[in-house]
Length: 376
Image 1 (tube, rainbow, N blue to C red):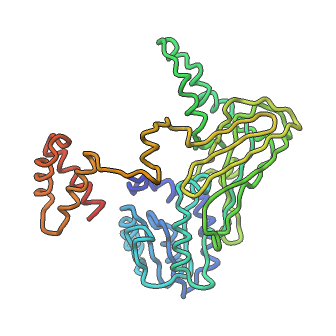
Image 2: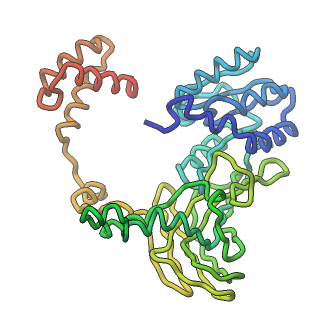
Image 3: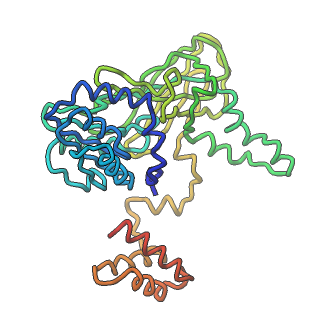
């Protein structure tokens, strides 16, 4: 289930005053009485309702989460009658017309995170009228080497020397290799980061023309101060109208966090030392970062998970899969979605056919209801 499926979980975005002001200012300059606006991934619909209040002719809210139904209620409560809500992804719904403005918040914490930008490109190519506007229209991924003493000690070094576990005779140093290969998302601006070299742009995307959301970058950094380098601090900025909004440590707080790509081990740097960052992140892929210069490390989020050969083999192009017990149960239920059989009848039949998996009526009913919510 998506982390956005609960409407209340989207409150941090709806009440993000820093972000909202950038979007509002941009909308104020482009919305006209003739504008048809698409709020893509609308959630609770804040930006779409802004556009309606600014005088747009029509607004379409599209979101696969139940939050869009709250957006529909909010529109009525605010006396807004020119809003249409579509429950589903942009790839699955059908809008009645082309649009003049597409609003989206499809940039994840490190711009490419969450892999939502391909859906923006799809919406742009299918629905944006000639001469239309995207908000945002551009984005840049940014990174810098950073010292983060407290965070590194708490989240990474502790795998080597957690005193409480050691007192119990337990040593989990073996798990360090997974800890150093994951991305850490947090509000690092509150942790007094020391940026050791001026930030640099890793990649820039023009959302008006981009066809893939990926990064293949090589950057060299010269330290303008010494310190212990704990990793690469990353963030993004995006262009909204004439303004650029940053999610970096120097900017006001927003619901977006920064990301830390840690080093395998800390590196002592002095002024004038150089480090290089080679970052690769294919669309829908893993982040891989190679550090060079004063120290050399090769890391990847692919290595943040245990590599189990039999599970890897199941994802090979040449694998010929067969159904396991869960797959057979799923297939059994889907076959009953014929418009003639009730959920109660399907649950009873499932219990009889797959009693080894569903040992109680309640378990069978919950499984069938979950399938019905997603596939009927």
